[in-house]
Length: 517
Image (tube, rainbow, N blue to C red; front, side, top):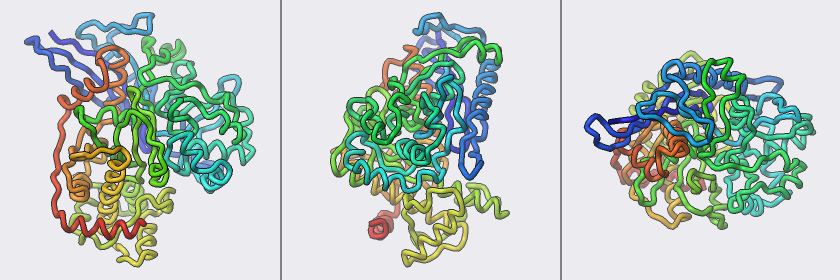
């Protein structure tokens, strides 16, 4: 006898969002017990930033509208009535296809501000907006980088929440003056759906304002920034049931009062939860618009070497921390393609990769994390400028530029992997790659070549699957993270890549280190 538990995960990325149904099936017709998870997309929608008044914003109400459409579509396909009791704990009947819960994950650092009446004060700023330019340097002078890192454990990135808030304060923003509550993006959307104001730990940890050991807001730092500490709500752990769809939403959508669960609301936290690793120490690469490479640790790593190498200690699922480094990632390819599309050359990603395969290897390399590549715009021209400034061959064709991006990313991964091992005091036999970027087989193979170790690629939908796992843990259907990862290993294909051309990549790495140092 088998039974199925169904949950709804919203996974919001910087370019698109999707509603994904996750189903956990336990047992089969013969009575054998082998839990399996399946995921299926029920709604996909664009998430395009909006330029207005010289600023770059998220269209948060459009995202809310699309989430509502996803709930409606999921209910029409899978909802056969609500199995939810009044209590927070949920007991599901066998073979239930009712939607047991909803969870939302998204990118980090961005937020919305609510006034004293609970109304949203303007569309949230996009993390690529330029209003934080220079803020890292100013706050470094004001507070000291050592103090900021000791009190947060977070990588210095120009768009972190701490710099956004400081920029608002410096601009004498009326938004900050009227604000009573700060909500990170998933929490803001949960508020619109449930009326409940919450703050989830994994996303809160990315702000560079949460103490990594005490897991409390740094009230003194906020005071010195001129930001009221009362804006920040006490963080709750992933797996907390935070509310249920409000009567207004259930009436609008004609759906039951489905519970909403705070998952690992930073999409990286959800993705790491779904890494199909066993019990041994492991390294992961979450590969998408951003690349995030690191490992899972039980305590934050806050020493001077982590500060010098600009690593981060973000909150994870199950009381863990994600010791990792943010890398610019496939944004370089995505933004290049957008530029070429606008210029009339509309090749697919697959065609661009084929052109890159035909280009000569290692003619030029870039530092993907150079700040010049962060803002939207003409990435190909910036790559050419970087190569020109560093005395290298200047790539001319689309294939040469794409190959430069792919090789540079793979070599960056090696550098960060080796530093992760040093900080964590561990050695990894290979690298788990998950996320949409693993569809780029060239990048997977290049990564294996660069690190000289196997790469295990899969699953693709890691963030959505991790979102589903945390919901199932909260519902009592999965005991813990280890059991969840074992189910992922059994449920989704993993493709293995073995290193090739080792000597050529070793020589390229030597050249790359000289370039980035």
